[in-house]
Length: 270
Image (cartoon, rainbow, N blue to C red; front, side):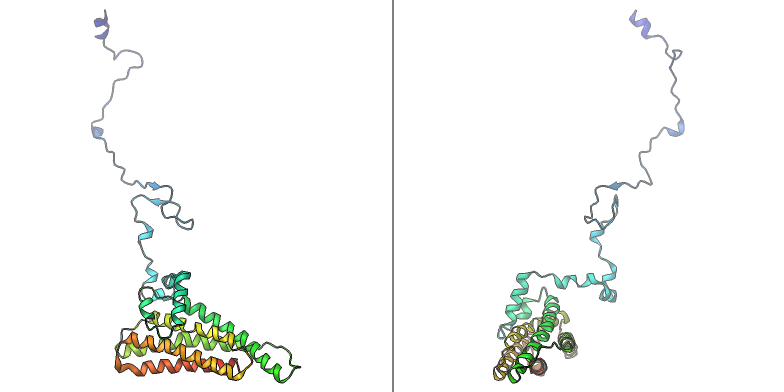
């Protein structure tokens, strides 16, 4: 009985449809030529980037923007981020080194990671310190001679301080850079800016002492400050160029630093 039923043809049964095989579709193609798979969640991190990334496309993190290369990088803010890659401990260590004029190894400390943080913030702090304390010191000196003198803030001190400090901190290292390159030294402009920027920190400390209304004491303070800062700059320049035939460069750096100290005393703490 079972064998007779199993041998019956099934093509005439209801719902039975014979398979139709197309000769042209015997092979199955599992490839999708225009597939554009997406990866989720995004792999590029921040919310400011693309929301999705095409599968197999190169990662955006491995490519450097072309705008940072060549002269275009001068006008791109991201080109300067590497020169602000310092933390508080590094900045404090470099400030303490600038207060040691006989150290003479500042360029070795900043060789692998020179920064412009000191140049920017120390210069800016010095501008406002000498403008504010210069006004206050002038008031105290006038008060000694005339008790009826009233307090008045000289706004031009800020403009003069900004032009003098920023101009000195930017142009003097730039001039020494071109001079050293001309004389055959392999100088780095960023390292020179970094060294000169930290050399200005001692003037912030001395400006606080220059408020004391004793003229002879003021001159002693500013001369000691100028000599200490000049020794720091000149000795580091000497170790940087490592040549005895360029002593004129060392002397010029010393004289300019002392001249800056005298300028601060004469114009802001008369």
